[in-house]
Length: 357
Image 1 (cartoon, helix red, strand yellow):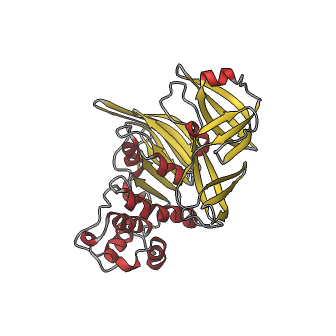
Image 2: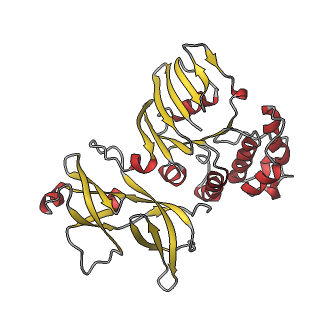
Image 3: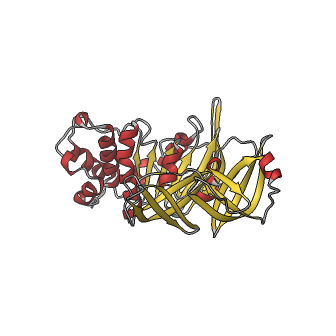
């Protein structure tokens, strides 16, 4: 699937001017509340019209204001899931699910049994929405959208109304949906950990403007000289081994390996891992007598001054890009420069549960 967006929408006190392309996978629309993410999602779904511009999916023009083209929502084959689920309270879960295919006029809906198994909602089919938890309601809403056989699934802040426990409940299902169905998704969120865990591409929106767009690892590793964003490396890792004696897991990635608390990890699991720039320290020689477990040989790719007192480093670690943020004083004292060999000391990482294989 390809998605091409180039639109302009003017409203009193707010203007949305967005242009980007995506080849498919999971595209995250990311930014603060009020940035324009949900407005853009509504334009993609067909809930409103832009003042100018075009929206194209898989070569089909859905909107072209200059040419007078506007495909209505029910003909776009976009499955939409919103923050509140929007289930019908008078219907049980089974009939809520089947409504999606009926409304879309799909002659042959996606197999109900497959979707029920994928989302783990078989035990809910005879229950009414009022008896469901927030996470269960969202899984049913996703199932209803999938029964439409959409070519694109649009999720607009689907976890924003849930507490952390319910988010932890539903995120593995979203990962499984991404990995097993390969259905293209547009995922709207202001939660960085969610998009790092799920997205392939990141579109950053600020005050109605697209300020960055590209593969997630590339966008998150960029330094903003003004210091308004927090850069991080995003790594795809595999759990290679578990040290039960010390409670540590060894994570393998293209640039080497890391040891982290094992938690519930098991050998063979794959997951996304985020290493923030502030959690990487730099040494010019292999350190001795250090409590930090993860020290990786690296080469400085480039350096960016951040504000009055900090410097951002992008590091090449055997083909994997890491980032570090240190003080200007440290950079000058160590006489750091692009091309220099250093040791990257990783103090902390963050990650979620593994994706399905």
